[in-house]
Image (cartoon, rainbow, N blue to C red; front, side):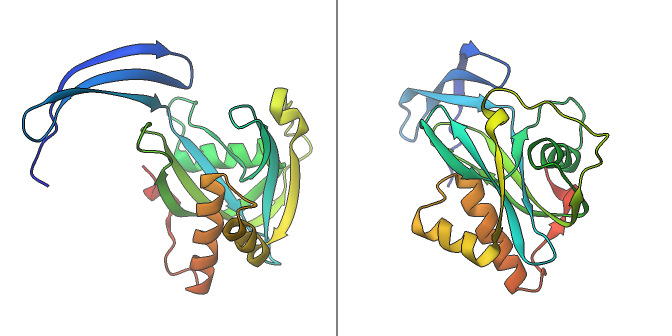
Length: 196
């Protein structure tokens, strides 16, 4: 592709703590300038926590936008300034699943819906899993208050993703990426520090 898609103007329409809605006037091939609206997102991390028996920690969480309880990975926002991405993933694993991991690898980096958002989620594989220390307390509120953690065999989770039972994009990709990494004897994993 040779077109540069020059942004002629950038207008913010709405801002909250997680995202903003913007309009860019973009020059298209042929010279037309058109408006494109999209969401600018702060970014997220997700965790495929895999135990020694080949089971993955999946959570059930209510999502207002789809008005459903979904199967998901422990995941959350990159909302602590300066926090390394793997540390954000470890924080989310502890907060949502009450787990810690001694081994971390990068599974995938995914733009979740690039047609309308720049949101990117970094998916990590966490292994050598243990319960978090009892002294490490976190008060879950709102939708997180009802979180349920389920240990699901990785092959069963793959079947759930392929059958449409799991529809959360990060969870589908994380489960499939973990299964492929395992099938390749973990050779496709990247260092956790490579996440950007």
